Image (cartoon, rainbow, N blue to C red; front, side, top):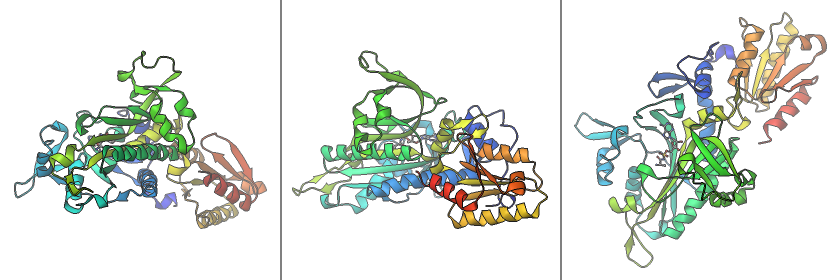
Length: 431
Ligand code: 5CA
């Protein structure tokens, strides 16, 4: 993508109203634009990251046999009257009437709608277990939307719902999703800490919040250091038995004898087991093995997709801007053409641009003519593309191009295009 043809608008300064790094940087770098309180437009760079985050989640769910559907954003109030949540959900629920006077709402979560779909189609134990998920916009009329996409009113959530025939099987499903969530967050370069949690408005008695470590997080975590040492996927479930809580649940007596770390965290996911709460209230029964009907045991599992974009920035940035982990970066490589009077430099840059694309490297090419070299450097640091290829005087004099690694600041010279492409392909495929 050539910047001259893109939708690329950065600002020199972060807006004064933004309080935390991710909010400041997302506005300054043109990743999102505020539309109204807690409601944002995703501009092209932000949308690319949002889609990458969503696709990692999709990919891991598919690997576990979890099936994707897409439920609407607007729901009928009738379903929520059945589950008895219509009134109890309170002021966060955006309620309205359609032209026929039917009471509707903008979904803040989908337990009711999922149970309704389940009861329409699934009638027998032979069809269970089932886990179904979707990625859809939610609305919660938060009393204090803040920190940009971190606590929005409209936000993108991935939510999964499971149906099992017994408590034991439901617990196995819970554990399977627990492990999958750890894998999902690790694929984004994050360090997830699952903490024991309350289930709040969702209801139920088994629940974990997934916090990711970030110095600017809203929660304070106390956790067994051993959690950080568990890196083999087969061992992820062991993390469940290790001590990890947010500060309001911290109890020195329980933590006795353990080597604890304390860090700040951001909640990026939340999983719940709540048994037959919705299947009973909404009469969603299946015929069991013995011919008697039974209420399936449910859990629900949510990831804040749009919040993750902010959370990843909180975890990875410096005074110059964002530092994207490769799997979620808006582009793999930034190609920076410095002001040059030489046609040869320009021709080489164009050629390299094509070569990068032909090698499936997603490149943003700063071909702007009316922008200073300094501003180009600042902009590419700000948007945090993992690798910058700088083509300027060194190419004119000795055919050398420079790569700057955004994360480390390391600079590497290349004097052949082949060596450069080989280096980039191997670095980009490490993950
Ligand atoms: N039904 C369950 C799981 S599907 C549920 O709604 N869980 S939740 O309330 O914990 O939300 C799931 C995740 O969505 C949270 O962990 C958080 O990462 C994200 N989230 C919740 N509220 C907001 C918000 N106002 N802005 C951005 N993300 C949010």
